[in-house]
Amino acid sequence: MLNPQEGEEMTKKAPPTIDDVARAAGVSTATISRAINDPDKVAKQTRDRITAAIDSLGYTPHFGARAMATSRFKTVGAIIPTMANAMFASGMQAFQEVLSEAGVTLLVATTGYDPDAELRQIKALMMQGASGLMLIGTDRPPETTRFLQLRNIPHVLTWAWGEDGLFAGFDNKRAAQRMTEHVIAQGHRRIAMISGISAGNDRVKERVAGVQTAIAESDDATLLTIAESPYLLDPAGDAFDQVWQQQPTAIIGGSDVLAAGAVVRARERGVVVPDDVSITGFDDIGLSLVSVPPLTTMRVPQVEMGRAAAMLLLERLSGRTANSIEFDATLIERGSLAPPRS
Image (cartoon, rainbow, N blue to C red; front, top):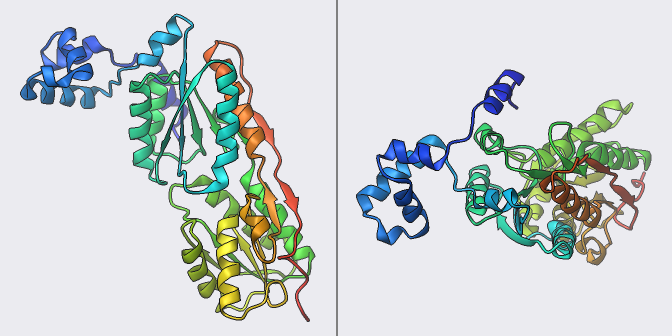
């Protein structure tokens, strides 16, 4: 997070222009344009000098700004952690449908949960003409935050909730706390958690914090251990092996994928869900229904968030006032959670 003084200084400083790059590189603006749009027509030594100047100044050719200046923005970008996980699929579909109705094209990029890759993708999408962006979550390096502020890039944040920015999202901590309170109310006192990888992921951190808060506020429940895992079935199974050593009566999964991986590994080991251990998920993707047994989970409002994110971004791009929209996650009870056997 930037402190107010830093934010104020950045808003006063004008973003670098192509003229600034030309002066720093000692070439004309026409040469800069050729180096960006048709690099083979510019000598390598000159290109290298221009690239160094661009990197030093933090300049990005913002083709989308030209469209906005004439009220003809036609393209926006969305950057998501991965396309391999179904948790983002329906939200992205809803986001795209609203944009399509407005005649706006969507460009999509992924980061692989790499914060540095997100900044590269932001720059790439802006160079491709994106007038604004949808971003997932709030946890990003200061360099990325500075870049967004310096360029004054319109963007909406989703799958999370906060006060600093334009949001179409939900409170991950509160949702995870509600699930944990429900698990405790079922009679469980020995609880473990399988979470996603927390580094650079505010959603994971908030869900862990929600579980910890519910445990801390209970009279006698204990959080035995937390195992982190990528959002893949086999690693989630390995995380089950790790937490099962503590003999919990309930395991709270930070996502449906993690919970399903735990259920599969439990079955392989002869551990019966929910008779021997209850396992809960988070997201309510299709996998939660085909799990055996089906997962008790928190339903994330993916479609609603996607639609709202698109509408808020279009409002912001059109110069209208856009206000954040908060949604609630919903507890869905299925067969993977039951009271512990006495």
